[in-house]
Each structure stands twice: as structure tokens, then as C-alpha cells.
Image 1: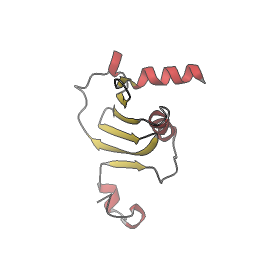
Image 2 (image 1 turned 180 degrees about the horizontal axis):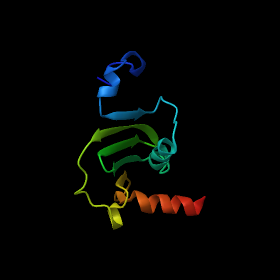
Image 3 (image 1 turned 90 degrees about the horizontal axis):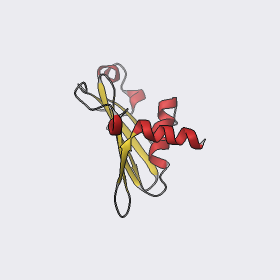
Image 4 (image 1 turned 135 degrees about the horizontal axis):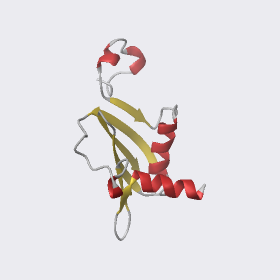
Length: 116
């Protein structure tokens, strides 16, 4: 329903949908919007997928060749998901040669903060 209709035309039906999304044509509104976009664009012309769980949902964030495509957040029971070490705050994978890069969102954000 979200993908086939304009949200401003959906009225009350939009509030009944638990899934949320963000896409590249929408202006970022929150700090989390900016963080998601920085995660997928900060690796240059590479493709990135990030999986970010919270207490009641899972966000899948995708970037292709350095461009932010979007995020889909769906309701999910993530209590059993790992959330420490290499998976703290979620996990990202960057398609890079010769091997993909994979690490935790927490480690990535710490590295980014030290560079700022």
C-alpha cells in the first residue's frame, strides 16, 4: 500500500500500516535519517546493506554504488537477534573487492565520530 499510493493521499489508512519507509527522494527529517544515509553513502561507489534492529522492528537500509536508495522498517520480534560485538546496534555489509566489509553499526559510528 505504501509503495503504490502517495502517503498524503492515504488518509487514515496510513496510520494502520505498521511498516515504515524512507526513500532517496524524501528530504531527511531526523538525525536517524541522516545517519542511515551517511552509512550507505560514506563508502564511495560501493553497495551497502544494513540491518538495524530495535525493540519492536527491523530496518533494512540499502545503498547502491554510493547512492542512498531507501529504508524499509517492518514490525519484528528482534529479542533473539545478536546485539554485541560485531552486531552491536545492527550490522552492515559493503560489497568491496577483493572481499566484502562487514561490521557493527556501533563500530562504524564510533570510527566516523573520531574522524569528525
